[in-house]
Image (tube, rainbow over all chains, first blue to last red; front, side, top):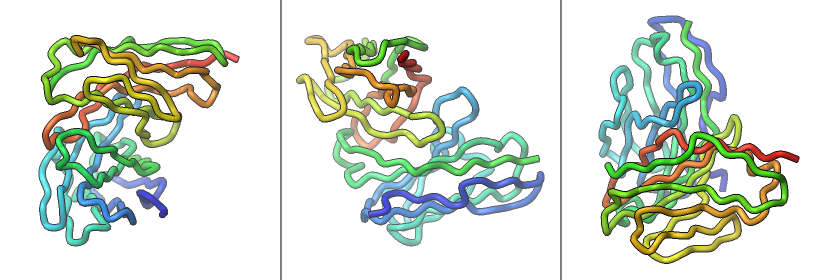
Length: 116
Length: 109
């Protein structure tokens, strides 16, 4: 298994540009999520999904859109990039999210995004 | 969300045991105690979790206080590769992982 994969690894955008960060997992996990991590900070939850067709907002959803059309993929869209969105983005997945808090989550390697 | 309190940083000598503390005085009966770590320039990785009893796995041990208001992650022999930020997180129900600032562990050769 490749686990959780993220593309691209690095990206530089100009203010106002749009782009999609890709996240895929080959473990047939129902739960997937997106976090951002600013320098020297912990991770903050952007959006999450408990299955295909179901998404919900996390702590910092503004400026980001998600959709979940398949179990494997959970793309994160930036509609109009802003310098405040410069961060490292991590995707995660879990097979037992609805197991009452005992599941293990697997994280991707991250996408480092810079918005000029 | 139930809160956890961890020291900002700790230091250990290589090949010595490391005890990373976590306080969670407002823990509820259904909260699992999770530990994740984040190596430099990598995504977080799962370390261990427990509910009431102490737990051991190939990476670490988790010692949970009898009243569950604190726990300790134990690395039995720290190596340079264990230098990371360690996060103690409480989870119950169907709530996503919520990360605090964690403890930055430095390992000295």
